[in-house]
Image 1: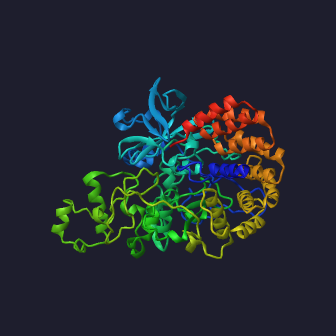
Image 2 (image 1 turned 45 degrees about the vertical axis):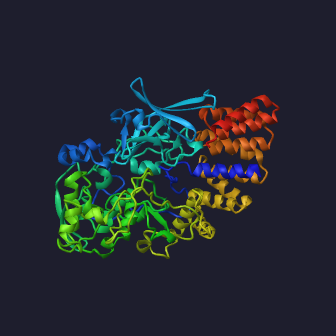
Image 3 (image 1 turned 120 degrees about the horizontal axis):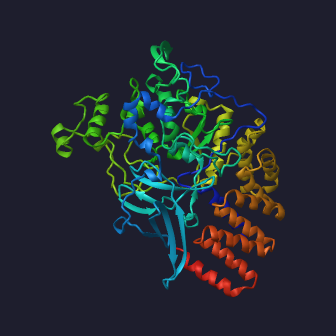
Length: 620
């Protein structure tokens, strides 16, 4: 029983590895079976920089001709999504701002040492004796800082989020969102997170857990070409315009670079949605790599975005785009169609009175000056600048939760009363049905949509939100259509393991690993399925590979130790536990496992000391 619980815990620990990451999406290509055509090659629009062979240029090159836009954009939150720590103006490091602070029974502190930034973590016992101390070098701030800054530590080819975050609106240091006791040594950041928080992340295609050097090959924060497409052709002959037919209109444009103003509303929104439409789960479409998307193309050609059908009217939808899609303003608008850039200037972040005037003008482009049912004198008495958003986009709580909207983008006509200190709701629990945000564009009968929905359901289950009725048949059909669809096969194997069918899962993971030896999901499935079918040596081999591949994942270490204990391999189990503690000296779970091993080795004095430490480290 304990072994089964540990295996399940390992799976959960692996998949709940990051609130910043939320879930993992792999950059993969099918290695056999049904071909997955690259939509960039069949593009028939007017822009010539959609083709995958067009090169990106250094962002500084754009500024040589577009100095005004580049100057204002440098201060935009998008440009500040990732900042080298040496360029960050750190907030005060004093007790008034909660530095140091305590959380989960441990002490956290930001310190400056040798002109470097370090995040310190320690704990003392009830007698005041130091139990451990750990320090992490900080290399990047992630997040624009408008709401918060979290921080990244680079360990070789692994990117870790530290457990310390600066919450700007509350002006305090505190525990990073979603961190659990077993993640305090650093939480691995997947490239699905860095897709939106960096200009580009150089993933190692052989291994989800690692990045190649340089990790950020095209700068740090989001740059010009994420919205305009690669500039390789544009810098050769800028400013040459031609007349083309576009959506039935005669348009004069420069074909070497995408200007979003020429795009249809859906294609224009796709540029924003590549990062700002999260859904409950996103999956890469078959044969697509993470950075394949090109401005000027529909986002649904590259990713599937799915939401819980029961929550399409969720009162506290946490994503700006999902809120906007529910709004009457969006649904009723036609020409011009409401979208992100109807209100937001992607080149400049407006603040204060300038922002209020800008947003009010955006409202008045569709609504007349006298349409508001509240008399003007009464409006001005409440807000001297007659701010539309103050009534119709009232803020949610200033939340400490990353990716939570601070204003109500549903734009209700009569907003319900809301306390600003009430946190927004978070989605949790089983899911009855997943709905594609792009169902109308893709068509319900598309087998690829079934594939993506089934894969989304499997990934959501890894995050602790399983479908009430798992889409096993759809996963099986997708695996049969394309034997090279490794992600589908790995998730099908894990779904079968969840249904207590490890013998059916093993051939699937073996096929995946034969094609991609470091496939993490498949290795995990192999480790669990082999243990469940009595193949302990094979299970151990898989756990050892997982621990070596992803030393930051505590679930893998727990799985290895449990399997070693099951085979009475106590000496190696002790060694693994101590190696774990060298990596994370504050892990109560590692101390507990070491205690259990020491008891089996009849070293009761050491076991009692480990038990004492477990009690001291366990949050009360």
